[in-house]
Length: 624
Image (tube, rainbow, N blue to C red):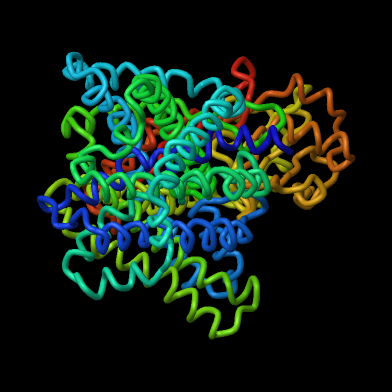
């Protein structure tokens, strides 16, 4: 129980846990110091921060959204899949829900690229305070740290969590101790916890508070990553870690920074590090750097989870996914995505050069993702929990109203760098919608070329082709049309295997499918011709291993073949070149994009766990 919470600390809370490094500093540096270091403004800002964390993280995510998990999986894509399932009888609404999920994932990608850069930079920039003589090495040091971070992703979140967990425990203890010392000296700062100060600040300075919201949102960055990482550790360890350590430590540290600024206004330049005694600053810089590496881990892990869900739901091309744990299905590594994230993170870090400049690009994607989650929450609350209209209204105002205010406050950042996450999100949305539509067009053309499977079987029976010993497995989307590889094999080789099994893989809108519900057998009309069909349902978090699934089906009696026979089976992939035509409703540049995505998609043999030495690719060209 405790070990689970510590491991969760090592992956889940890094992003939100390192916000004290830059959140309060950013507020007081906005607009040349529009927020002043007096009691009215300081208490107002602290109150805004505390209640933002309480309402959005503690209540919305930890209290409510984690109950809306999709069979243990969290994140905007799992939430969208859950909403689709709840509204399955309303096809149009289900399609809209998927689009909402795509927008949420796209915004999260923008956050995933900026978070590692701003987190690591903000920690290493502590050298400006502790060792000014080497402050010119901030960028090179940050780059080396990020290279190391992305290099260790292949080892998986279990090992990373075990390694990072104790470091994060120490980090949150240091946050609490550093803040507590200042709170004890200036206990009046506790008044800032009252929501009346936030209201008074907004009423007295509406224009300034609007601008300040664009920086206050930095205290809740990582909330979506926290939710997305739920599949790695479960809700109970995450909740325990939050309420017993993370939330109290963050609150105390923000109060301590506020007390320091109130009594020493010059400290607003870097209140976090100036809160630390001189003798402890260098060790804290080192600890903060380690913590920001962990902050980056939180969003990287969340991005892996969301990307796999998107692949399984058909809105991203197949990616190579490696399971990094034999016990935990949610712990995965995506090499191609890891490389793309690394390139993006390094690019934005080198382009902006400092955490202050990067903060202008930060926030839009975060707040956009928060709004998407709230919208989906409101949609699932009625069918899932039977919420009354007044509950929906309260949630819409409390969560949606606050998050829309944050989003509006961040719109002013667009011209100063906020366009970066929006550009990333737009690119992701384009890729996802292009892939989704392109797949539909390819499937239409393939069905024309494949022809009826029933007619093919009748024709084969008339021909009485020679049968060779062994099992031939043909992965194919359905049992209505004929696999192109099967047609090509009969046409060119004029033989059939003794056992021909056509396998259709589908992805359910739940993370995991039990064995009892995973298979559906069909003898395709005849019991004596050895041609059979098996439908296999995987959850969107299951590893799609066809050979393992076939052995399971055989061992449970669904297939009449001995399970060990599949260790010698041959697998035939239907795959041909994709050619473009003018007879389509997809514009030319999107067709070109789809073809590029298809060419770089993961090898289906690897994706389905097919043995390389017993897998053959056959088929014919398809058009789009």
